[in-house]
Amino acid sequence: MIRSLASRWFAIVLWKRILAALVLGALAGLALGESAEQIRWIGDLFIRMIRMLIVPLVFVTLVSGVIAMKDPKRLGSIGSKAIALYLMTTFGAIVIGIGLALLFRPGVGIDLSGAEATTLDEAGSLADRLLGIVPENPFAAFAEGNVLAVIFFAIMVGAGLIMAAERGQPLARIFEAGSETMLKVTAIVMEFAPFGVFALVAWVMGTVGPGTFLNVFLLAVAVYLGCFLHMLIVHGAIVKFFARLPVLPFFRGVREPQLVAYSTSSSSATLPASLSAAEHNLGIQPPVASSVLPLGATINMDGTALYVALISIFAAQAFGVPLDLFDYLLIGLTTTLVSVGTASVPSASLFLMAAVLNVIGMSAAQTAIVVGFILPFDRILDMMRTVANITGDMAVATVVAVWEDEIDRDVYNALPTE
Image 1 (cartoon, helix red, strand yellow):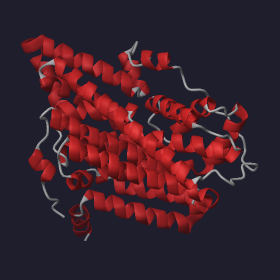
Image 2 (cartoon, helix red, strand yellow; image 1 turned 180 degrees about the vertical axis):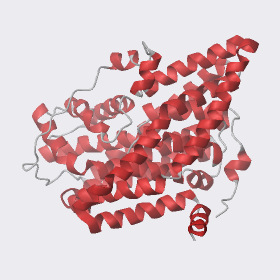
Image 3 (cartoon, one colour; image 1 turned 135 degrees about the vertical axis):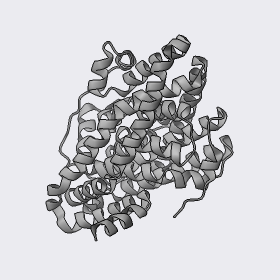
Image 4 (tube, one colour; image 1 turned 90 degrees about the vertical axis):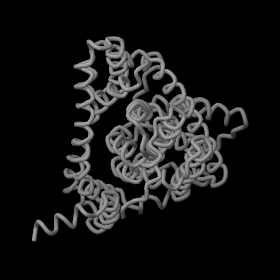
């Protein structure tokens, strides 16, 4: 009987199992309420398992991908194209965020008097973040989970193996085998995803719940609608017009990482699922997937950019601060800069929001009140922002793969088995 149930379970496509777990988790959270906290450990265990994969997966797949390029110059070509596309999608997200803030006017009439002021640590300077890309000790970067530093070291190792030519082949073959092994380990861990998603969503719905949205209904609608529009319009458009590929297979292929992103609220935690989906669902080859997706998980924050731009105007509306065209331009520029520097962990955008609010004349006290007002329900909004983030990563990787002729179109266009 157990064997029969197991075979039926694994016969169901993974994304369907995750989606069912997400829906059931939301219902369970509403039914259990605060008691849902007791099953949070299952979700935390799932997050620990996928975080366990991030550093070794990024390192070995990126080294293997660089070796597969056979020419270090190609890495510059891929990187420059990816960064340009990431900046473009971020700009599109900011425009949508500002537009919806002006349309819905979510801050008008909001009473912030009951919000408890919350101060946050200031983000490090741009110079510090740039220096942090180059690790003083690669092993320390591995231990700390510093993905950007790991990416830099992996690129250097891959380039060194290309230059070593025949003498580097034994080690190159080890990295190739390691890359394939880590992808198989990722597949094993992803089988636990439905249980982790169920527990995480139940915990969020039980402790936060939809009732919290009553005071910020328009803001929540604007965030969710903005992310949906951004994915459909901006991400869909670059796949359709830049890659000249049909859009439906793309959105079909990114379902699993989207569901993982929604439950974990972390771009980094979703990276193993993104790499697996890129190869098996979209046909993106390792040289592009292993370089573009880890880069996107650290610098591409479309959902964050949309959210921070929207919250900035929300705060101005709530405090009655008038904004002109120059202020909107400042919001757009500053939001782009801080979104690139945002850590890919839950609610990280709150720690950089002060920089944007400061440029439009908001005081530190006003910023603390806004953050305190948003903090209780930010997790549910963050879940949707993360979906927009990783969808942008996948869209850019798809376009770059087409430009670099590193995509298997048969895999991309293949109809799902179920």
